[in-house]
Image 1 (cartoon, rainbow, N blue to C red):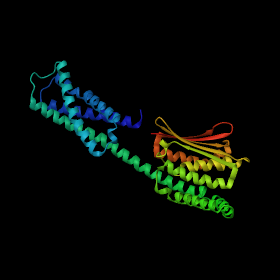
Image 2 (cartoon, helix red, strand yellow; image 1 turned 90 degrees about the vertical axis):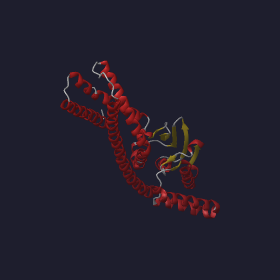
Image 3 (spheres, rainbow, N blue to C red; image 1 turned 180 degrees about the vertical axis):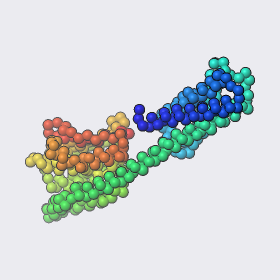
Image 4 (tube, rainbow, N blue to C red; image 1 turned 30 degrees about the vertical axis):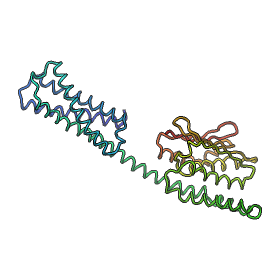
Length: 342
């Protein structure tokens, strides 16, 4: 039993025991009672726990805790009335079956009892919804703080690793070599480098961007690297239409592509090929990056920071709805795969 369930059951048992005991105490002080009279009050304990537990089940099942506050208020009010009526009817039925019911039915007394029960269930609902509201608020606040700190760290790492002096130097040298040979292509390369710079400097302002926008950046990056590696770098991009609007953390794919080139293809004399594939399968979005190369302890250590940042960002933003996998695809290729459940 986890901590929340433990707290829930302790509160249930203590709360309803206290409520039953207080009513039983006042009843015995006010009237002359017998065992059967006391038994009718003792039935409140399992009845109250049972009804509220079923109520909790439906709260979780229909995600009432995620509805707007106004809707929650209406749910609490209506549910409190329904539970009070149900409690009264079931309790009356039980005491009749056990032969401890009163001979006469007093409408005024019944109404008064139902209204008092409405108040009890209303307080129970307020406590339950309030606890989860503040718990979720606290979690969201912690998550935002962690995400902000992680984003800053990632931004600094991106500026140091992805737009490091070596990358800039190599890109500018490649462009300079093109100026006389192919001025048009040199202009295009300058535009691509500008896009990467602008995108990286703006990344801290967005938690998510569409996959299509991310892939435009990746294409610019691959084109610049292709100028440097020439025939040693080949790439294929296959993006399904359904996945283009998928929102992902900025520069997530670009980081993985850079790792593929830096720790895989650049170390091979003949170079290699990168294939980026994104598609939707049922409720899952799968983004796969397959590159020539092999994982080994050295390459895992070198690319560890970027990979761990990718895992952390996915975890912070998607929770258990996202998975990141990195493994040798076969004897000549490495697979990086992001799986996001809708």
